[in-house]
Length: 418
Image 1: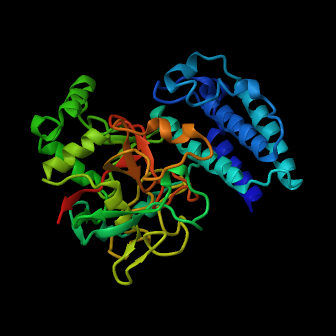
Image 2: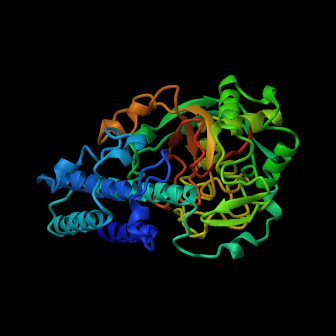
Image 3: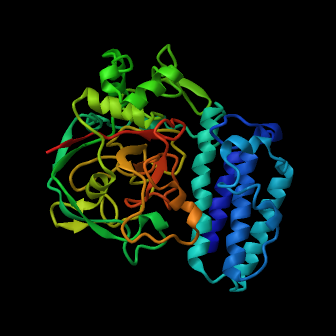
């Protein structure tokens, strides 16, 4: 099954790069993101390193590891490096994959958690690649018309300002034994005491955001933190990323009308906080978010997913990249027991929490994945987006980014005290 998942994941990676000329793959489109060839070669080097480790054998191209190491070579420097060409990159990917398949077939790569790490890592880079396609206004690689999904009944989509009450109390947070592969920052499961709170039925919509703009939200200094206001003024921020002054938005290489009933996307944490302040509300903590995504108030049970036990799929949530963007909340049968929509998929949801380790945190299998980012610098996002692969999306997965970042597919779900 893992071999099949490796094959499916690689097919998706190659599909994202298909149809692009070599110079487009090799070009630096934005200092915020790598050239696509760096991501592709990084995927291959990561696989080479960890499958070699799992099999107890020597890596194929260890001399490439520093160039394609995410910590050693920050994004802002990757365009200055002597990178493999597009042709050389695809060849390296194929050679590494051929050896991976041989080691798995021979039973040499027995550490299945490391194979799952390789799969999830590549799938996460699929979403990063889509961020670049959006920033560079390159076309949708799947050419799938998501209009049918977006035309679904959106009667339940008007919940961005409709808050549902939760009792709080002692809550289990994090991934426990038997949950399958999870990242180190999701462990260990532990108990948090939460006060009663309220959480919006859906993420904030484009209609909500247009009202925020019309009410002067980007000009009202009192809504913004000091750091957020300095960022807004310095960058001349007046609307979400990819929105245009004439009331349209770029959506994977296509300029389209802003759809009022879908979740607003490509907003920073600073913008999300100002929007919450404009309504006398706040951002949820990541622990409030996880309670809402797992609690079943009718049974008192903690569900693995908002809707119950069924794994994440496109039939339940707007995930897996093919929709091209957010769809109206309520157009898919993925509501939680408390009636909250789109907790998984659609848009990543900013939270008030700083990214840090849980009590008893232990780095595994390598320190550089989570621990260097702990502290009061990065904010946590939850839930996944339309560009997240189903295997990665879960109620315990923790994403993180700097509060000014907008290239990620992020929105906001409002919260309030009881």
